[in-house]
Image (cartoon, rainbow, N blue to C red):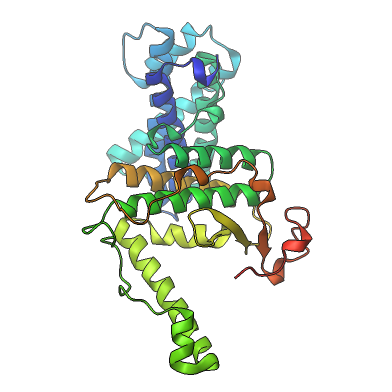
Length: 347
C-alpha cells in the first residue's frame, strides 16, 4: 500500500499520528521536570496508533484497556515477532503514564528517553504492519490549505532527504515567506495597507536619506532604517502569531531569500555553517506549525488590490541554479552547494 492508496480519513489520521510523534520528541527536549509531560504525549500517540491500526484491520476489541487493545491488534496482525517483543515495554510506558498522570510520579530522564525509543519503534512498526506504509512517507501537510506553500514544503522535504540541507532550508524559507505574505495581504482595511503595518506610509528611501544627510550621513541613517525594518518585522510576526523564539532559531539556520522588486526570490543568503539534519528537522517542524496555525486563525478583510502575489512565480523547480550569496566567514566551507561566481553580495 502507498500513501495514495489510503483513504482520506486514514491519511489524515496517520498525519496526526506523525505530528503527535514529533510533538512527543519536542516535549522530551524540554528541561526536567517539564520533560516529564512528554510521557503523556508518548502514550497518547501509541494508543492512537493502536486504535487506527485496529480500525483499519477490523480487529475485534472487546476491552479498551491498553493491554487488551494491544493484544487484540497484534493478534489480528498475526502476532509478528517485532510487535510481540514490544508488548512489555509498551505496557511499561502505559504504566509510567498512569503513575505520572494520576499519582504525580515523575519519570527519570533516562527512562523517558527509553520510552521515547519504544514509542517511535512501536508506532512505526504498527503503521508498517497494518497499513503497509512507511510513517515517514506520510505527509503532515494535509492541513495546509495553500497549494503553493504545500508544494514548497513538500519540495523542501524531498530535497532535505536527498542530503542537500541548505537548499531544503531555503525552500522552507520560501514557504514561510509566502505563507506570511499571503496571510498578511488579505488583512487590509483599504486594499493597500496591511493591518499589521507599523512603518509610516511615506517611508524614506536610500536616495531620500542621501539627499537629507549627504552620502556619508545617509549611510549611517540607512543602518538605522535597517534596524527599524528588523524591528517592524519582529513586531509584525509577533502580531500575526508567529512564535518569535522559534523564528529566531529558524531565521538563523535557514538561508534568507532576497526579493529584487518582485515576489519571486532571485537570490538567497547562506549564513549558517554546515546545517545538520536536526537543524533541518527543527526548521521543518517550525514552518509546518506556523502554516497550520495561520490556516486555523485565518480571516479576510479586504483583498489587497495593489500588491498582488505572483502566485505562479513562487516555485521554480530549477532552484538548484538560484544564485546564493554566502557569508564571507563561510566561503569555501560549503563548496559545491553554490557556484563560485555568485560569491558577490547582491545586496
